[in-house]
Length: 325
Ligand SMILES: *[C@@H]1O[C@H](CO)[C@@H](O)[C@H](O)[C@H]1NC(C)=O
Image 1 (cartoon, rainbow, N blue to C red):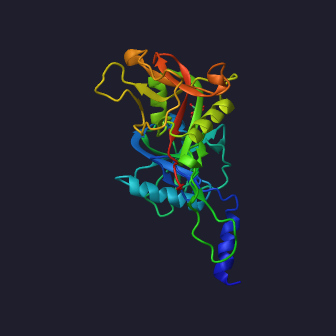
Image 2 (tube, rainbow, N blue to C red):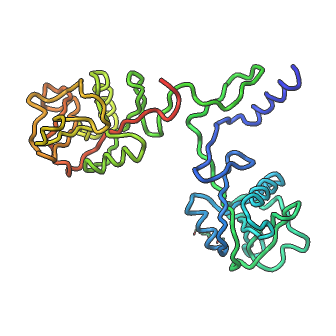
Image 3 (cartoon, rainbow, N blue to C red):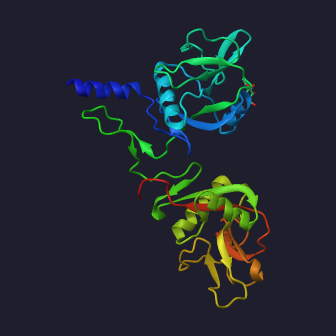
């Protein structure tokens, strides 16, 4: 085995729990890719800095190795207009013991000469070649740096083979991946979620839009059946009547009588006999009665004469977040 190949395998073994991760928006990936950082330039006291870091889901940064110290130092040099300004990190003295706010052991230390002295909160001075730490009065105002854990990247996959040469890893998933909580239906290369938390039509639509899609449209018997099955799986009771993306345009005859909120075609339909109706004027919002109801011989169907203010569970639909179908 050549050296390069050996090193590649060594690298893979090092990262055996090789789940690729992704940093939250607005943070930068750290030396350890599972830890991300966000710098805040507006000077504040230690306690406020601590709270802001917790609000974004993290902590003031801890530094557990010279590598991380160097990484943070570089990041600060790039971020600070004046790199001689000290920056809060997550070290704090409790009793007589220095600890990291995130619970990491305070094993690696990089105090400047004569430090720590007075003051119970730690800062780093990135202007020095080794970027030493100082103890400071916690009331001092200075910039600060937060750490946040990276989330698992659902779109990245790694080859499981250790044969050489090792391909670039991770790679974007070649198979479609749905956003968390969504199920994939290959026939329509789409992802669906039954949300069992009743909302009115508009709020349900906004929920789906916020997640990157719309209330579901339905375009074929197999898609209808898939959504019916999903509803039985996630809904309560023998049958459900969730909102789907069906609207009618009431009395405005210049518009198509009914439409999907995602603007897709209306060639397929599965109306209850006699529907669609113009029962609700402008408040015609559509739901799907799932199979197993006492009506329509127990087959699923659509109706559109609901007041849009009713609250119902609902079904969102969106494209896969990566991969191609
Ligand atoms: C940081 O903030 C959290 C949440 O407000 C608090 O529980 C904790 O005591 C704070 N830590 C320090 C060292 O101020």
